Length: 214
Image 1: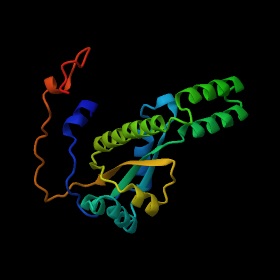
Image 2: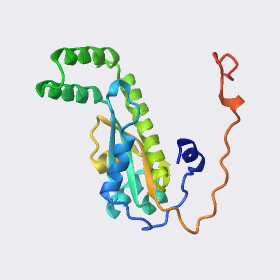
Image 3: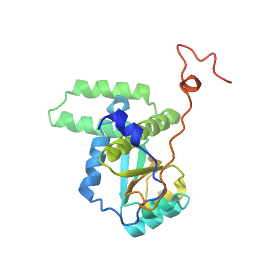
């Protein structure tokens, strides 16, 4: 199946078949492994994935996502978070590689210099942008890979961040971005309507956006 075919067949599942599909730990980690091949600024890989399958934990997540019934029905859910301190993690990994003889001290110095210029400590907005942007790309990749494997998917963006942090013990450095629900689409759910998209002339500009509506 090509990426184009996946994009054409993908639909947001409106209801899942409760207990309709068993997604084991290995299957879910395989999905995450493939999604982690997504593009990443400076290869910082500022994404983290919290996998939830336990019934009680689903109920906790249900209360943190606007009481979306998809959370209760889905076979598994993956909360994608962005890491605001990804540069520190990258430097720790580079230091380990230097000690293991896999990189030179000069490489480490160059990396430290580059990261200090693109993510200075006083630029919290840049850190947030990078964390959310890269985590969002990973979430999209996760959705596409899941669709390619025949899974029903739904992105849930209505998140109570403070409740999520308290309930799932999420440190401040991680920003909850989106939840991906996975499972078997409800068998008795009506067929999904064709998607409506804006025509190209509404969304595409060439060379300049001077003609865009203010």
